View 1 (tube, rainbow, N blue to C red):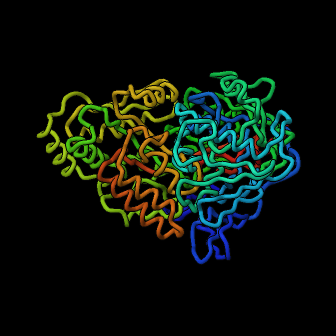
View 2: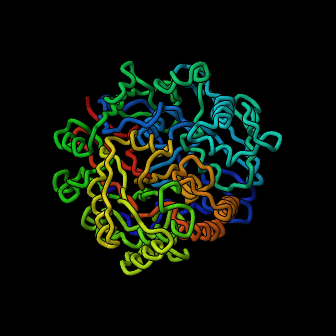
View 3: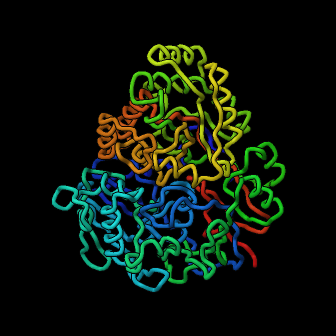
Length: 557
């Protein structure tokens, strides 16, 4: 668990199979006479049974950006809670493989028309049944609400009833067949559709949600391994979960509950870990990277994970528009950053300099095959030359600012990054701290921020399609730069429809070539889990996406 995975070796190796029809079964997606990435489904790894320990596991946490509604949650703090409160159709194991959770089977004959069958007799934590309508109605509601952060997942994937999006409650081509069966017609062929269905946005909702969505967001009712305790969510302080006795799936809680504790800084959380006042942290602060292995011993965790770090300059930022000057300055900034030195000095070698826009632990990673990726190389001479070309178009004025949330342990690398830019280009460059993540994201989402800003992506499901679609497709919910390139969109959608991993990778790499020309974000490095746990817990494992698998953690009372 603690060994660092070799560079470029995917956690998910493909699960390639051949059978006579397309079927997403426990063995993965299988396609007649074709090979594709399966999502690496494997035997059910759930623990089953009731809790094997009764202690409450204390988890270091940050206040979510929004109320906890699946279709409006696209950040890690809210997502971690929802993943423990809800059961999707599938779930992801530590190695990036997937298996069924609420679903019994997901099948298609053409990658477009899918039939989804649920396991029988499932319930929400309020005792109401989980049915096919629980999924269909939730998806239709999300698709009909354009203000939701995750609406685009449905608008971009599932076909519209009647062929055109009308914004109505039943706009998607979904049909309830019976209590445990529904069908979905996609807008275009997508072989990896089942792999995506473990993501938060595809969770079901109970009928009570529709009575008062705002109230639900502060006290969600799910169908997963945990439910809110009587203490519930005290904003800015903590959120408490207890095992959900109605859950019968493979992720049964092995502890007495989870107490998510809000920390203002990662340093404070780490200090509490050393004194056993918190049990689980998912990030060691940069101030402790040089010492945490000695301090924690066998409880120190370092492993590769599907996390991509970058910073973004919205196209409304002066001098960084979608034009020739903007492209020159973006490329100059990228060449001005000494990623190798920063990852070695600031992160003690626990991060890997970025080579492309996905992740080394996701199948298909291949930086050598992408044209234009040399823009990520530290090259001071080229950086200055490009910056001067931009100045000939419009002279630079002011200070380059890089915004970050101070509660996330980012100051050290931000300072190093802006110093690299400053020293290379000979301009003023500084970090711009925001007190917390929510404050930063509010200005990013409102498009009122007047600086470059840190961005990152923790994969929602183990596929390159996840990050490329969520961050760079026109109109996608996490497209912070408001990037729009029809050629990129077309290549991406062709890749989604590809029946083989080889074809998909070729198209995705062509699409990435356009990203390197346009640089809607500046790739920095790939994350790794640098984490730890207290002396009071056992059975701790961190997954392919860097999250601790909390339901299997045990703790004596």
